[in-house]
Image (cartoon, rainbow, N blue to C red):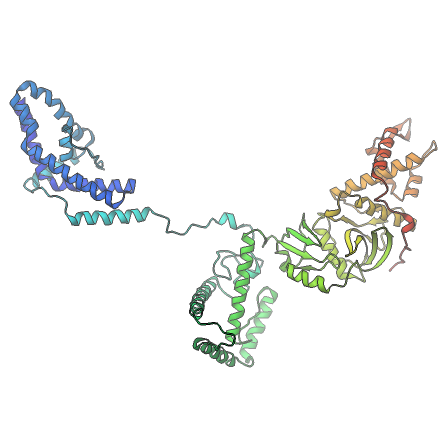
Length: 612
């Protein structure tokens, strides 16, 4: 038994002596795998390779001396039997169970002082791998053992650095998340454009004319090339400015040599400008205008010098880039044409619905409006300059009602067309069912204002047809959001019925009513009926009499009585129940409300207009 064990160990020792190169390569592969998994530094890797080589040399020398096997053989069969299980578990188990190659580190596993290193498991397993390993061991049996050199360590270090750089993604640009900044349901309004590219050459998509390469008669690649050229020129200009900073600043300093050359170059470029267009160019321009119309920018070549045209292109790209930044910041909603807020006087109002403003204004997230003439502008600077020159302090037209600081102006849509159109566009921002925007001539607009020392501020308005065949006394009605829930809506409704009384007509609002409009009218009709029933002393009441006295349409009176459960059908007759509980509640609210927000009929100075 001892001789057999000794023979097997000698065979393993000779085999391991002949496979020292393969052992070192396997250990080196182990180091590479450890670097790839744990991303160790180069210093740790070098130390690990040195410790590994030293351990392999120690193990090989111990195997060549044959100390474990010899001791077992000399001490007798008992001690050999005790050491046999350890040797059996040290080498053969790992070979035949996992198919790993026998290395010096594995054979020295019986030594408790030797360090253990986990080797990478072979991709192939089975008898083929074992046979190949045995064959290689026989072929390389005479090869002397080799220790790692400085060249090996240098190669291992370079490999570790390359692998660490491959796993390090900090140098790569962050991938843009298009779903956060782009809404792919939006499209560019230019006919035939696929929304790809951008005039600035810095963005992948665009949704407005300002950033459309096709509208500017360019391609996406041309825009990218121009962007690269602009960047280079900007870097050169920055470098020149840094050099000029070293000069002493004086008030009348002469231009530098570079500045003088640049000035001469610009002058020469402007002299080369063609004075006019030849016949071919005129035909080309005419054909472009006829085929595209206003959907494309006119051809600008030969209109001015190339230098000035390039300056204009740069200004276009810069403005488009600024708009794109505003859009990404949420201040511009290009493509959806939805104005989010308006600056109206001292208020900034959030809009509710879309309004068909011109596109160059509709794509802005915020509009600035003059609260007196209702002109809309793009920026606070333009508004400030306009307010310094605007002479309007109240709506145009005739003031037909004034009591306290409340006034009502009658504005003819035919005489003041621009003001009435602006008023309709403003109203559409807060009304869903409004369809009247530009055809304002057949209508009269009654604008209610609140006056202070700066002027008459818009509170609300209603419009009505000059000649209504259905006796509608209101076509559209609006209370500005900053004045809602303050009683101004009922004042507008009451004023419309006051005009119907003067005209000796029965009026009704035009349908369909908006949600807020229906709530306001139902509340007004309820107050009118309860006020009438509170003062009525007779026993029989007529819907027609109520209608003639209040100017409310009978249909609206019946619907309001039904909603209040005051109209009953009994023994073939319709009865109106005088519910005292509702009348008492109405009295308490009227007392609490006071007489602040009411229309005084005596303050009206108006005669019905004749047919126009």
